[in-house]
Structures are given as C-alpha cells and as structure tokens.
Length: 65
Image 1 (cartoon, rainbow, N blue to C red):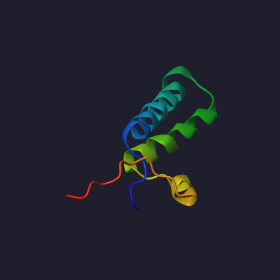
Image 2: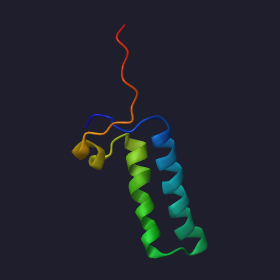
Image 3: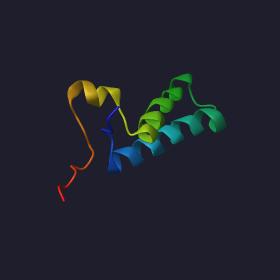
Image 4: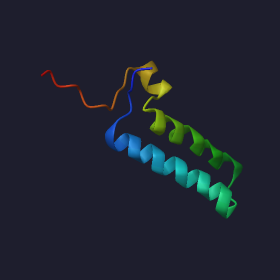
C-alpha cells in the first residue's frame, strides 16, 4: 500500500469521519452516518483504494536531493 492521501485531503477525511461518527454516537444521527468510519480510516492510513483504482494521489511529489 503506497500512500496516496496527503495534506489537506488527509485532514478533511479525518475531521469529516470523526464528525459523522460523533453525530451518530452523541446526537442520535442516522445509521448511514456510520459511513464516517471509511474517511476516518483512509485518512489515518494515508491510503484510499478508490484513488489507487483511478490512479489519483494527493501526496506531494518527492523532491530529488
């Protein structure tokens, strides 16, 4: 698994995932809000399977030294 989620994308995934999970746990949100587990996991692991299928990466390119 090569990292393909980086920077702002990673932060947004973690925040949105936590917000959806908190909505369910603390405010009685709908069952579908458990989908927040997916963006949280992809943000924490720096890897998104959908990105790899489509060849997308939001990581910064590595600089040659």
